[in-house]
Image (cartoon, rainbow, N blue to C red):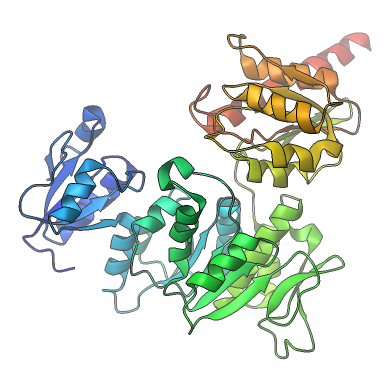
Length: 468
């Protein structure tokens, strides 16, 4: 980290660039920033860095490149930098190295996986704070790790994507977990093996490696990437064995960190303490508890933290109940694996789905939930793919596929779902797909769903008033 007077190139002028440039300048580096978007680059004016749009090769004297995580390793600029002998890292790796310069470096508890990362990191932050720790959730959750390190926090609950991990080489968490793995981002990584390898980097230097016994990929990644010196802890949605956390009747229990894990289990919380409900969120809670317990948190603090946790927006949030039908927004279910967990939390569902599948298959998902589907309402670019999967695996389920060009498509989808639902059903937005074909992001999609549901509920209430 001796960067005084050295030339550092920052690739990307978005959130990462805004976070990285001031730190590099504080370290005395000469900084150049490049981005293909000139308007975004202009937002960094005043940060005492040279702004150069569209570089495909680094300046000749560049010793370090700090890249935004979304830049692919095959990007011409990053390939040229590596060939020129410059080290290429991400902002997470930079944050780790800067943190190690402190007299008392922060503890890192790191979470990755295809689904459930943000919920788990939020649960972990809540548990740590219940224990009295100066803790903060950061990383892919929206608060840059570099800013959290500079803020002087003692414990970091860190959510990392596979992109961020690809550009990290020396981070050494106190504890780490890969929650699960399913097809996602294969257009970036190229294959499931490469995607798994990127996720596995989280374990390379970890002191405690947590894995999901119920997820073969999570277990395999722990076996292949954990160092020999690491402690191994499993979690399972069943009775745990020694060395695991799990469920006994209506309790979350710990047989890994208690006084005598071989013969007894410590009670951590009740299933009712975990929100949002559903098996996938019980798994998230067990993962968060395992990381917290690895850090020395007591069972009492685990329970208090889970009870205090407030779910983030667009993650299995119940919006309203009208006419005996509940409406749930899980717009964050942006791939089939996430949608599976959401659908399995309900017995009878009118499913609103569709968007950009990014090459992922939905056949396994549809086959697994066919018995729970009252009906399906489909919208978005890849809705024909989901419709075909429903025809193969759930031919008796009524399907309403909205045609492109429908005015206010989410309003049309909610109204169509309402017409298909019966009292006791859940109308569930769990798209199994990305949103950018129709919306500005999963948040905008969820907002549109919630607005349509509230309009529907207000209309029903007005009709009832008129009839009274």
